[in-house]
Length: 124
Image (cartoon, rainbow, N blue to C red; front, side, top):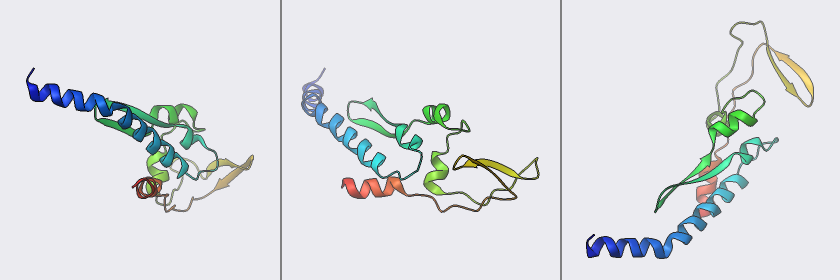
C-alpha cells in the first residue's frame, strides 16, 4: 500500500462512527416524515452499509412485502402517488377500510407524499 492509501484509510477509520451516526439520524428523520396511518412503511425503514463511506437509507422492499396486507412493496406509489385504478378482471375493486369491506368501480388517483424530500430538507 502507498502512503496515500494508508492516509485515506486512517482518515476513514477516524470518522467511521460519524458516518454511521449520520446514516442512523437520517433514517430516523426520514421515518418521522412518513405519515401513513398503519405504520408499516415506517417500520420497514433500513440503513445498510455499502462501503466505508456510503450507506443506503430507505425502505426495505422485501420486508414491506412480508408485512403489508397485500404483500406488495407500495413505497414508490406512496412516495410518488398513482393514477386512477380500475378493476381488470372483476366488476369492482375490494379493500378493507376501518375494518369494513369496501367495494368500488374505481379508486381515485393519489398525489403521493414527498417524505424523502422533506427529510432531506430537515436534515440539511
